[in-house]
Image (cartoon, rainbow, N blue to C red):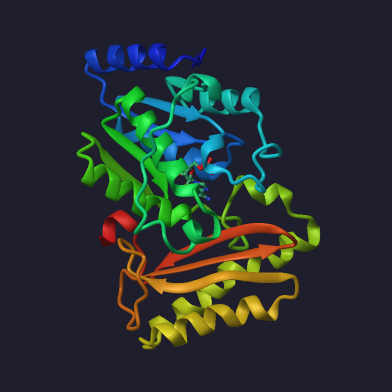
Length: 289
Ligand code: AMP
């Protein structure tokens, strides 16, 4: 039976016990509503670490006032059952009041790296993310933390924070798990209706079109972004938030494409915001940095 821990102090004690038994701890932070993308991180942790802790916490700090915090999908029992099957050792599922008791006010932020793309679309989002990730790292004390490339800017911010603030752990970024038709798995995909689900393919199709142009020799960043955009425009009901070719560590625009550069896209499909990205020439964010 998988152990479910609610209190940060109890989680910290359990993590210390696992480490004392010589088991290098792998950690996968999530907001629950688990799918195969999350489970791919758990599987990698299971395969490479001595013990695996997964957190499930819908972090209020990273949602804006007009965002979907209240309706974000929550199914703790189903998630815990999945994690038990996946061989996870402990689930840390705290209440918001335990993570942010009255008076809690310190924030971890990186204004420069959070200025564009997701950070510009969602003011305060990344301060919320970095603050909770820093807290979770301190509570769980993992040797390795696993993140999905699906949230590429989040990965860049976490990698930067770990380096800048000397967190004693390694971050591993794993590839995006997709539906057979290319759509990146996301807990928010369940907001899509049948027509939206079909339209949502435009994001991965656009990335594939741009990657194909790159493989056939195109090195203009603007031309690759135009190829990506063309697929979004072609699909009625898909509204671009942004599309760009960037350096995967700094998220600054690249005018000239190179292997390892990152294409990022976000669009609204029937009101649901979807994200996707691709590393030119393959690889993940940690392998190309
Ligand atoms: P979330 O619960 O959405 O905060 O995601 C928790 C972790 O799972 C993050 O590191 C995400 O990047 C990762 N993740 C989400 N979707 C996918 C996916 N389709 N493939 C791989 N990892 C994912």
